[in-house]
Length: 296
Image 1: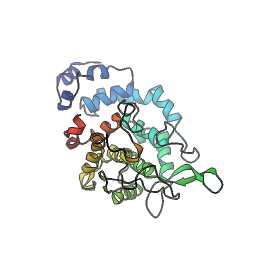
Image 2: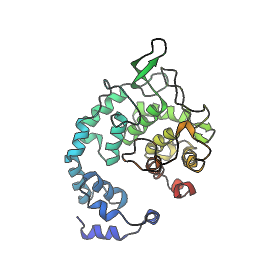
Image 3: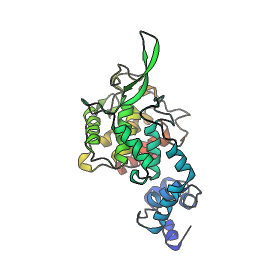
Image 4: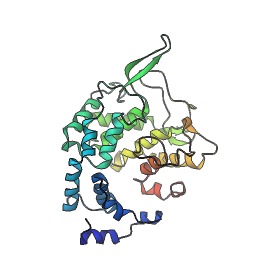
């Protein structure tokens, strides 16, 4: 695949390359995975999406059996009960992965239909997006499905909708306002608490004044696509809070998110909290890349 123009691009040395022990771009651009090739062209080699190489790579990705298997097996937001925010069958995770690969919702009806189902469930009063989850009834000692919402539902859903190109959609704007309104100063710095779930009085395990690292990750992964004028003033500070969780790992474990052996193994796809997820979320912000915690 290495044309003359591509070889020229590969000869360039962007600043981020100095962070790595060796240059992975030639290996990646010759991958058998269509989505790896496409993302390498546009993200690592900075080739415009109107370039013939990129157009061809995108077409190959739309035909890729792996991509189409995932699109054919998207969870049904109306019927499938959420069993965990870290699960591969959690629809926002599935959509995030497809969007991260570069699939556009206007190019696939399956993806568009899935997003429309998510938009159909939003709390009218708060603007918080809902998820069909199983909740525990202490009176009957039984679990039953209910439309509720933790912030790790709402924040990830909001980011996914932004990545899907829907930042100007009225419902998404309400979702963004909800995110911004809940941004506060926590025990670790600016971030978001794990508030009791909407429509169900429960929250994650941890001290009430702690920041939830995963919620910060969810927002950073989508907010880089917003206009600067739409960003909360403390957004970069939330990224610093996230990175400082690593620096203070010996003394703090906010909401039971540890930083031991499991955290240090970057497990793709980055659905849940590990070093790869944190670096991926922060990598969209140059001011965070330059910080000491990110460099470490």
